[in-house]
Amino acid sequence: MSQLIFPKLPGQSWPVGRTVLAPPVKIKVTPSRREFRARDSTLPLYRYSLPFEFLRKTAAAPDWQTLMGFYNRVGGTFDDWLFDDEDDNTCVDQLIGVGDGVTTQFQIGRTLGGFIEPLYGGVNGAAEIKVAGSVWTPTSIGPTGVVTLAVAPSAGSQIRWSGKFFWRCRFSSESLDFTKSSGVFYETKKVEFITVKPL
Image 1 (cartoon, rainbow, N blue to C red):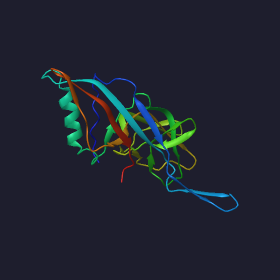
Image 2: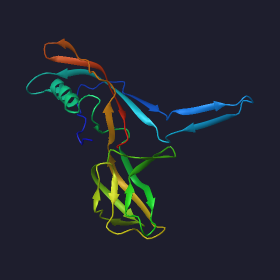
Image 3: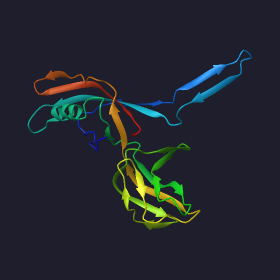
Image 4: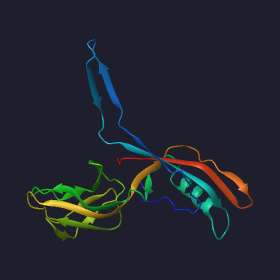
């Protein structure tokens, strides 16, 4: 598990694809047409697809080298890394737990359209943690987004967080194709990766 951040490069173009990958569902149908459905997970994954219209290959603007180097540093599909999705990277006063007088660790998450989801990419920058409306300074916020408090919040007190976050991802292909379009310019039609849960 790495803390490398996917590079932001000026040649990224449109459209940017984001696909929801729902957990696989096993469906058994009885002779009377009743269905029994089961799934091993309740959380979706997301697949991203980013096209790069141009990647410069110069000493002053080493875009091509940066992207290829990043891919090689994480070993293609081997290691995971962090992605900043500019359309989905901020929480404000998000509920992450309710105190019980014993628990001191809470997983950051976010709500989107009523669906609550943990954020395993961790915090991007500073985060504000509130317990029962008062700001608390956490002992730590781990790389997978686990907030540790020095004292367990009292029973019934709400724990909330505000800040920016990353998505933990890995490349979904064992190859990355580049095309040289002119002297110092490369392009790649599609860089695909998916979100992952940490081990």
